[in-house]
Length: 261
Image 1: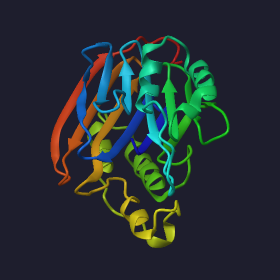
Image 2: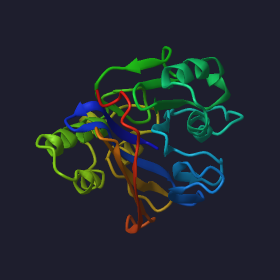
Image 3: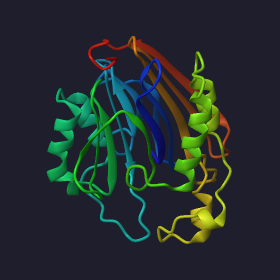
């Protein structure tokens, strides 16, 4: 997962809204978003190489997602796939802040990562490139391959588009959010970050939606959790030509609990 926006109790009528793109090598084997055969209470895509996932939810009302951290130098290969961080949270029973605190001491077991974990009430962020875990207040946050809310052109463009779409909250925001995740316009050169990969690659990776024969946006995901517990999880997949390859949609219900308060 390389780009996402998460609105935590910041949109009227919704506890959580997530709009995310997963950027990955097209040749990496991946299972579409569905209930997992070995853990049927988890719904999400699956990385068939590392065994984990970039984004998934548990039917009990928990959600988590992970991104890598871009570096222009060689990165040590950690002994565990970063996608297993998400799986471990969803298979556990602890609160998101507790999980983030427990993860921090072993964070070096993984290559550079950001994790967002939501337990139905609290939303926590932790990274092995930042200063300790944080429990996030109500608000809208963006995340790409740097630390939380780093103002890269793509994250700021996504934030502005999200604000336009949700200014008057549509009855079904999913189609509009999928559309803004398909924006392939690159940033202007004077806006590009310098992460050590060269200007041409910075420009190529600066768009919300990335097109490429070997690497690009593999799928877009929109997750909405309404105040009454109704959940919509929609994944749209793309091939190496940036053509729609398929859609998966899952509608379920979380317990209302205290998160809607």
